[in-house]
Amino acid sequence: MRPDGDEPEPDDYGLPRVDVVVPDDARALERDMLAYRREERRRRRRQRIRRAARPLTRFGVAIPIIVGALLIALLSGALMTAFGPKPAPRPTIAQLAPRPSASPGEVGGLLPDGSVDLAVGERTPTALRDLRPGVIGIVPPGYECEGVIAELAGRTHENVLNFWLVADPRPAGDEQGMPLKELKACAGTAHYGKPLVLEDREGVLAEAYVPRGGTAGTAGTAGTAGTAVTAVTAVFVRPDGVVGEVVPGPRAGPELTEKVRALRSG
Image (cartoon, rainbow, N blue to C red):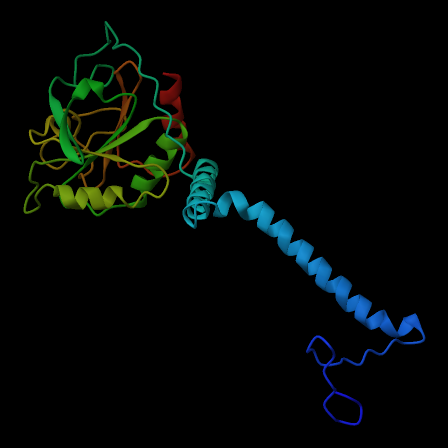
């Protein structure tokens, strides 16, 4: 349109006339030049992004999803490797002592003949003489789980030994042997180290190391009359299968730690 508001007359080509104003000073075009350069930078930036993403977008959205899933899997694997649980080292098992100084079932001798069931998932029959090296905790009827269970679990774990828990199935007065479910709950009180739960239906271990009649022997002696059995009895088994000591009612402390540590050296 013309400055006076009238419609311009068309030229010979049928197009309206356009008033073009040419400034006297080129500095008046500076704002337009800055806007033009910004638009050019945006255009070049968009082109670079499209070129970089072209291999990923060639097949649609499938490739970006697959790449993202692979990155997540790699990151998860790295985190699990760095912070996940480490496999527990296995205790060193030696050959059974050929000529122990005592008969089986006594201190200085091998564990008795027979087998028990390892109650981890499905029951697994296990020979008694394969329970080495480590500590066997024999739980009496009516036993109320004590902190010494967690203590033994922790001390055996840090010394790369086993710790088994087994209930004495023989009744004592009105008390019956601890059910397997309660024995597993007692084992679950250990926060460092994991006791392995055994089921000894015949009571072979209790018969050998916890005397019948509700009495327990003194430390290192099985079958001698003493105090009433109200606590766990700990049987210390060396790597060669020899029972080094039987401790009724063990108590947490440096002495117990030293007894466990001595098993590792055999």
